Amino acid sequence: MAQQEDVFKKLVSHSKEYGFVFQSSEIYDGLSAVYDYGQNGVELKNNIKKYWWDSMVLLHENVVGIDSAIFMHPTIWKASGHVDAFNDPLIDNKDSKKRYRADVLIEDQLAKYDDKITKEVEKAAKRFGESFDEAQFRATNTRVLENQAKREALHERFAKALNDSNLEELRQIIVDEEIVCPISGTKNWTEVRQFNLMFSTEMGSTAEGALKVYLRPETAQGIFVNYLNVQKTGRMKIPFGIAQIGKAFRNEIVARQFIFRMREFEQMEMQFFVRPGEELKWFDQWKQTRLKWHKALGLGDQKYRFHDHDKLAHYANAATDIEFQMPFGFKEVEGIHSRTDFDLSSHEQYSGKKLQYFDPELNKSYVPYVIETSIGVDRMFLSVMAAAYTEEKLENGESRVVLKLPVALAPVKVAVMPLTKKDGMPEKAQEIIDDLKFDVKCQYDEKDSIGKRYRRQDAIGTPFCVTVDHQTLQDNTVTIRHRDTMEQERVAIDQLRSIIVDYVSLRNLLKKIKED
Ligand code: GAP
Image 1 (cartoon, rainbow, N blue to C red):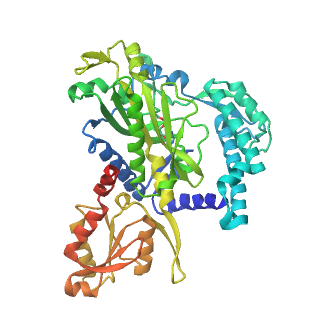
Image 2 (image 1 turned 180 degrees about the vertical axis):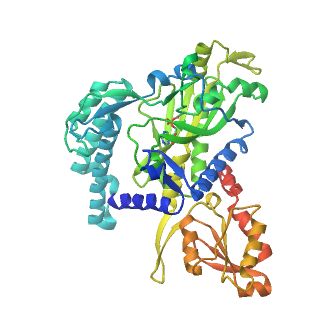
Image 3 (image 1 turned 30 degrees about the horizontal axis):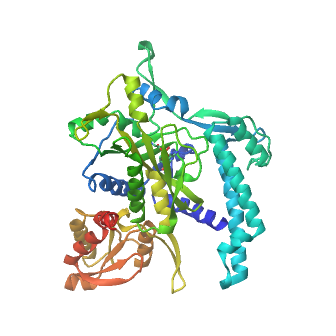
């Protein structure tokens, strides 16, 4: 665990050192839980967004995109339930004056029981070696069984308290489990209170009577309120989907773990409109499609799991998370929700406008049901970076840090390097870039030894380094070095484009999603 935390710290400093992620307003000592993406970060982020966007609107003929405004009529947030119910349960420690989410404290406690069980199993596996029967050990070891029973009892009590929105019970669980504040080490807790997560501001001048507007906490509502516009102007037939990528804002209380939980972040959401009664079939289908999208990246199939919700949000009749194994444990990256007709019916009620769809096959009108897939760009970014970050010991005793990014997502696809700054090599390298730059992001690098230049490119995950040397000037060939294997081959310059462009194309990822 400590080792994993260490890796995470290294990842955070690597992200800064190599221009991926900077703390916002750093020269003013930063703004908590707000981050800026640097020159490499923005490329990686844009590539992730394109991968998602194309997987939605290219691979599904019945999914189209929109880009709605961040500001929306404030009644939208009343109708969606966010004004009344978009809350986190808060608790303060009276000694440290630190504020926590009560549910997060309890979830951490659940994770502690899991850790204890894992440690017992690992210890026994070491002791018994090859003859170890893990299933039998888990079923019979007293300490494992004790911790398992405690975990299950806590889990059941916690789920019930959440479902009943029972704040007193949440506090009582914290007291009974003897959870202490990590800062003060005491159990001196306040009551649990609800805290609304939406940011608000005012639109218009106060003299005219300013309107209180919210910074959207999700992009989904922009899709709901436009669904009939898109359906009618696009002549869409149910089932169909609307996809959107955009910023969302939440006044998170416990902002931690770098870009995992931010106050300003980006979402990629798709609402899929279906016939009432067919929603659970589509829910299952989208679960599988979305998992395939993740797995196609090749970050490791074992790093994903579904986590069904104990407490369903106010709008859902089924919900699951796709969790990814971050350096700090399995964490939610994407939510898939069956939102019923909650949002559209509520908007009908609050706006007084009909939001029904006429189904020509059934010859009747209804409010469609909705399956939502909702993924955070920043969390996806973090999971890709975490899986890609690798420290390698090389055969010659040296070590290197390499980002083994899925090649289609890499910020720079090819670095072109003249061996020396003389004899026309820089000009030749520039010529190569001038040809490749219409297809892929290239970088020219002539500073330092070739070895150092390779390391710099490894650190940002560049799949190919092309070197122009003396032989190039005679026979128009170059060496091309592969990031992961570090192998080099000699190829003709006029082959470069097809080698590189084909290899790094998003098409390869998109095709994988469609494979069975
Ligand atoms: N429209 C549904 C919705 O917003 P959510 O589970 O609250 O559902 C969806 O959010 C996704 O947005 C999450 O799975 C996560 O990836 C991302 N997300 C939510 N809050 C975030 C935050 N504070 N910082 C970064 N990403 C966040």
